Length: 166
Image 1 (cartoon, rainbow, N blue to C red):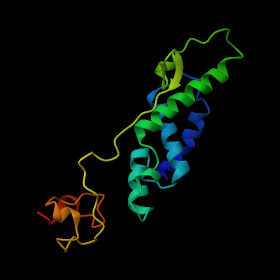
Image 2 (cartoon, rainbow, N blue to C red):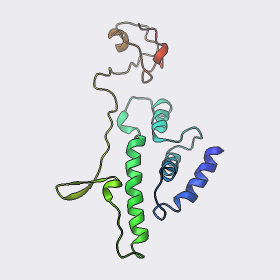
Image 3 (tube, rainbow, N blue to C red):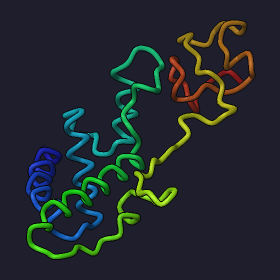
Image 4 (cartoon, rainbow, N blue to C red):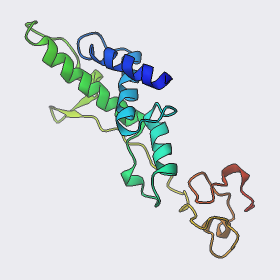
């Protein structure tokens, strides 16, 4: 119920989204609200946690393209949404609004204002394909055993640091 209360407070706090100055608490509550729209689970409050939850409990195949964005990328979207909401809310009441869009998820490229796209590597370049063998018992089948490395949290066996491959 703690998350429900936080989300309820988030609705209240989001009511002021674009009206009041942006702070870290407002960004955090906006992220919590968006996570809640995806998955109404009390223990998940950030997009990074949501990605982990969606990967481990809601998908059968490893398809990183279908995972929700990371907390870093959603933050940039929240900044842009705040910037736009602020402009819409304040434009009828002010002659000029002095906000730097580059502080809210935009950058100038060839004299044009464009959205900044945050990119984070999904997996390191040298990361082996996670195993799908379940128990890693067969040396010639398990890609982790073949490369003589420990299984990771993305492997089907879920061994991670308790892996017996090495």
